[in-house]
Length: 204
Length: 195
Image (tube, rainbow over all chains, first blue to last red; front, side):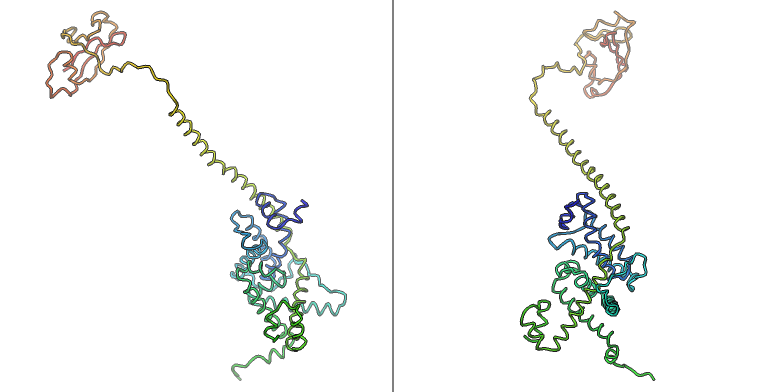
């Protein structure tokens, strides 16, 4: 249906709840990629990301899904569900592993700049380093970076998803960026990083 | 603007004062460059992941789930009408009953009172046919003897008084057995007390 292209998430949700399959699929297609990437960045696992994406929309199908437009956008609400599901997976300790890019379903990312091979290599290394640094962040900082910096979710939606005030989103983001810069700096200058370590005891 | 004030204004950096501070403060300029590098890195990572999405099988599963859900929902919706219909039927029944009870009625013709007791005339008891006492308004026992039926019943002893027999007052409520002769028309013709 052509009208779905301009319909808001809330309008699609209303049509979906009245049994319109096309509206449900339009909503899914609009939101699934962001949710999938969020779950993938958070969990580092393709199967978990797939499960989470599916569970988010199954939760939306339930009559008592609990979405309240007064409290925020549907996008923020969906990210909030995804976050809870990811945390459940992480708490089980099954999937807090490195990004699994060996899976058959993994689509190799296209780099933004590909003309200069040297630049491409540098970029690829830089991107990998940043991705590793994000993965290594503590969970509360990782989720805010993934949401706001990678998925470009606005602060209000991020606050809904993280179930915290906007001020907390800002402060966590600030702290997370500081941690990332620190880690990237250490990776680029390992000697300097080693210099910051203090020996506690000499056993020799 | 000092360094602290400058970093408090992040991410609103479009103002003149902010740019001026970056030109004057080398540490802040360096830090700002690192932040910009980081933002560029984020954009590169995001661009690299932009094509990543859930595999098509997720959509297929969700579509199937949606169809199951809407199917069961339509059943549930139809079931929701059951209590409504029940209440409507109950209300209609109550309404009909109320209408029946409050409707104006035609006065009924006076019915003759039901005769609960055998009307017994005060006649002189006449012993007849093995102790049967003929009842008043009956043609007697002998007239049509072949078609008569004999029925044994229990009656209060006070019934004997009506036939002129002597009964003490304190035993008037006792039951006694009696044989009643019924004519072919079903009317009692005579009675005999067994005791």
